[in-house]
Image 1 (cartoon, helix red, strand yellow):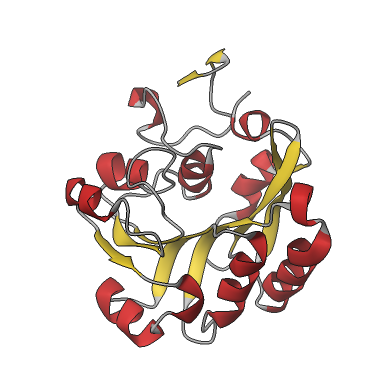
Image 2: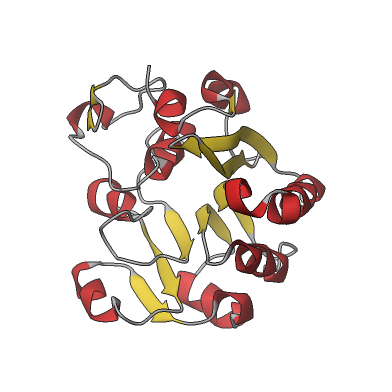
Length: 213
């Protein structure tokens, strides 16, 4: 697969990875999801803070190449018209104040394969996380942006406590981009092969070194 640093091999290949020429996430979140879920097809995602529907988007690759469906939500309406190029649903909303019954209705399930959570500023991401009805929803894979490089532990530590309480396993801690620690990546041990995921477990590593050999 081509990256900014050249052509590199995936650390954890999955069915279909051999034909991928590129990914769309800015920091490899889409490839982490596919690596963790062994190239799952026809999955379901919830993309909170989705921003542009294609550029630096965490779910476009899943939808386009692996037939996933889901819902993209962002408070900014500047890209709304561009979502016509996406097969999945989209909505403009404050992710900290979602009508979760409506979200569940639109997804058609309470078992979601991937949750992408990335709002601005970082404390909003934590506020959104706390609003999620985890007693009803379960996620197989989660990427959570804490932006510790600029918010220190204001978001990182409370989010980690919550995920631990809800039974999620942190696979990659403080994933880095440009030397900055910005995200934690989680899996549900009841839905994901943790032994497989342990092959990409990492702490304070650049995202490309997590995903690629």
